[in-house]
Image (tube, rainbow, N blue to C red; front, side, top):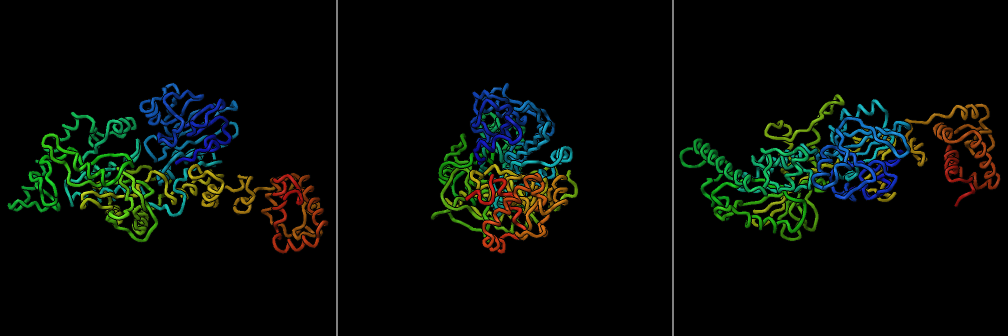
Length: 602
């Protein structure tokens, strides 16, 4: 969940700009930016929203704001992706904003901001999945080439820890399709439930629906968001709240069933056996794999989209098997239910896969119908590493900018990976095997590896975490992963930045350089703490100080140094042997930041 701190919502260097921070309103706000339509980013936003400024967002998010939330269209400014637009700032200047696909949920965007007067550039990721298509997005790199390096990156750090090394979405979708086919072979009358939010997880749903050769049933509200987001496809989804549509789907299922049965019979040996694994005569609702009498008619759909969480997992699925009946016969449609919970939190770093029967203190394997106490199922790390191993690095920045949902035409390499991952995801089983839950690491947030690769690719001057960053300790814990790939000298609030990045040394001011060259002893203290020549000074520290201090300030610090030396010569010599060396000048910089000399603080 995005950290709810006002300081993270207001954009440094862009007066009056607010991103995803509708709880932090004020008369100075001149522009709101909404990265996507998830509840943790719309906190404070409601149908009666009156500003004081308009909301800039993508066309999809704008449609959801007005049609679903009821925000007045006069308050919404939908802007196309990849097209720069001007936004007035609170200081009377103008900034150029550009939206870039965030690969999170439909309508999600990265926000690229450039202040035309100061030249400052900020990139806000909102929530994003930094897959290769995002890291190499031509629009993003075109902006960087045209306007220069990003000064500050506000980064979605939901999974910013080394243990979150889950597979790519493509591989997880392929694995979900493989699991679906295996479960149908085990029991053809299986209903698949795919957990989802109000918007998001569409690729996971599509992967299961295609593998089951069935449309996915959704409620009226979910059908509306799918249509508003451009994801609706009559061949992929069906609205279960529409009686006419569901009746048509049921009729179509019977027709398809007769065609399949006729085809199987024509390929048989005359004995009535079809030879298909797990196949059952559609006219025999008490087939060998069914424990209960089922409707002789085929169900209208084998896939359903359900909310993530709520209630007891297997109890709800058992009730669904009992209550979801054919209205014409009163008999149940399904013999089994399989639930998918697609979320990155299901991934746990482990060398073993754990099979669970779910009877005593069973872990929550990720049922979208409910939450239970306990651990989550672990995924074989070998399978994840195998999924990563077969991909080739792109040769051009414009390569691989689209991601397709895997289907029957997937490459043999991906099929092998899908089989490996599918075997690693062990279900939580109850009700004599009739209800099964699979927790799969399908995430619409970046994995740790993807986060590091993204920062490494764009090389910002500064990174600011936006998730799990409530305290300074939280921020420091996250920041340590990115220091190597940022321009450390750009943040002068951190002296250690000068010493960490040895590849980017600030230049010495010309007048300071002349002062030092003409009389180095007068300008700076000696490196050994004595009164001799000023040799042995670390040139990087010298450069950092030269960029921060004027010649007069350097002389003042030299005088403070001499005074401290005279006060306690013996103590100073003992200290220098232990900690000083080339470091006295670094201490001088710290003293200046603290507003006093060597004896001025405790």
